[in-house]
Figure 1 (cartoon, rainbow, N blue to C red):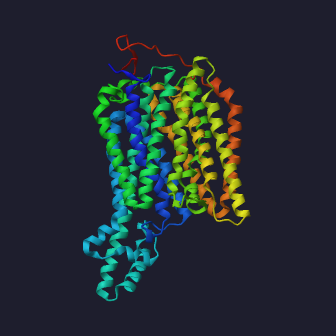
Figure 2: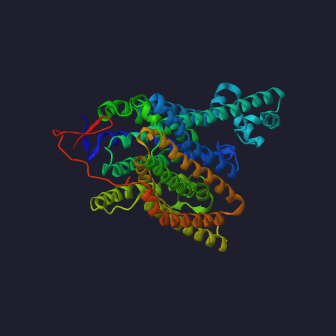
Length: 524
């Protein structure tokens, strides 16, 4: 019999702890990605321009959120959520180790007595990663090797070392990213779906449970920015990527240790095998209406993601280049500022979930749709603030804005995120047909992926249009979208057909009759 901690099934905390380390590993890498790609090859980076780095970051991060569609389908039909989590964790660890090997590849090549190929790469001026254009890269490497080699034999050895370093770095890095994409597809939709299955239908605690879950998720992201991000920027890129891998090893170790006692049989059997006929059954009118609401909510969440996820690309590069990061004579890494919004989220979410529970008992908890609108409006205000700071910087001919502007912006980001993601995810589990729950979670992540892709296109445009114009455009977009959501919410609530109506779960002692949910006994 599975008990509870602080009013929630123990399995929620196990899943949250596991996801904490998965997010630690992902955000540790994501915080470094645009910086790594845009750093000069002399500093161990790839030497890309800012626009290409932002576009690549957004394409990759978008795929991270799209892959759960495929992963959710595989989990639903073949593997089950529990097996998908384990396989995903193994792939994720492998991927981060490959990223660390890629960043360390020039040193590995040097220790293979092929001389310092990195010096040739730096001298040649080529950027890394263009494996499909080696016929264009090779002559530049050969020319640089000839300039540095002195003798023909030395030049040939230098060229060989440079070619090995170039190809090895690119192959390991792209292979690592591919492993992480596959891992996230299996891991993310499955682990999120299990949280919803730990509660009975209509249980008032479900929203709060997702609050607990997302608090741990963002705690992992915050630690990642300090640990992996700080190590990558200060000690070396490979140390940052390796730290991300170590985090996932911790998470999956605890998960394997406690999964059976805390989760019971939840997520072991693929949903299809338990109800093939139910999967094939047509959707009812109520189910169709609820799915339409989920799609509409997803469209506005895409706008939200386009604004919020500038922090991984455009805003991180803006922080590095145009924010005064010196505090008491110490230069603060750009990745550390990303933790401001996460810290605010971690603090705000428990306070908000406690408030929602109190309001729910009084039958006056606002719809998740209104909370999405509030998040969009706060994001719009945040961009108004940063646009004002950037305008002042340009007008005064200054090189950087004060860090307080960026911190204030990220505080609003954190509050907005606390309003949006936990409530939207909980709403999805209420709107989605139970027989398609895991796949629906995966499809929901597509909206985030689309938003991140849009964020990349917008961020890359900052190179041409200017940062202030991008900030103003995002402010207008978010404020307008938030207003539209407020106006549409009454109609959307009617189409939900009471999906947001909740009831207090029966709270009993461990000796009392358990409340059963998805094959799990949940008791207090």
